[in-house]
Length: 170
Image (tube, rainbow, N blue to C red; front, side, top):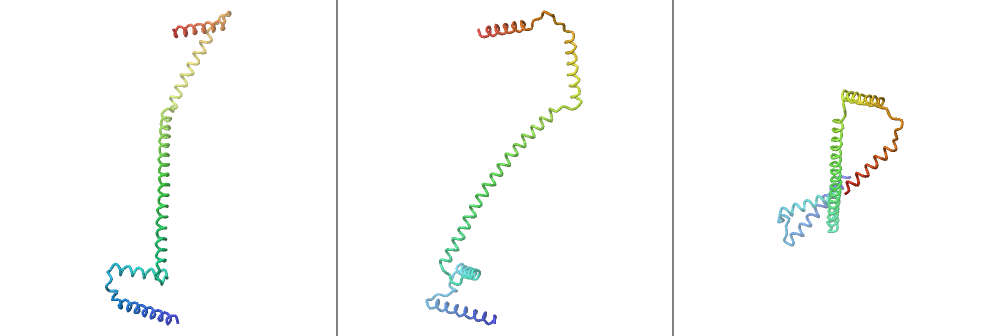
């Protein structure tokens, strides 16, 4: 049954094609007279009609197809521009992060150079302990007079400083 129906459609299309060719011959136009590029365009049009099931070539359909393709092109350009801007932001962020990493690496290197090794730390500790011991010994040997007045000494130092400042300003 399907085969018979399909055969009838093929015959109807052949008859329609012959009818159109005869009408073209009546006005003195034959399909073989068309340039190759026009013939190719017609073949493409037939292919599009078969794929889209559009059996009537209406200018409105072509306009709709054109505007759809134009909209897709504009949307693609917009998406490309947005993605380019995002990519630029990401590259700038990467550059800024790289700069921060370099600064931190320099800081790490400087800190690493300043860190003392254990032997040098021990030497410094021994030196400091020796100085502290010598200061304690000096303090023990220091004898202070009983009538020593620290407030009077501070007053004299302040008086000398004020005189020196007056002399410097003149």
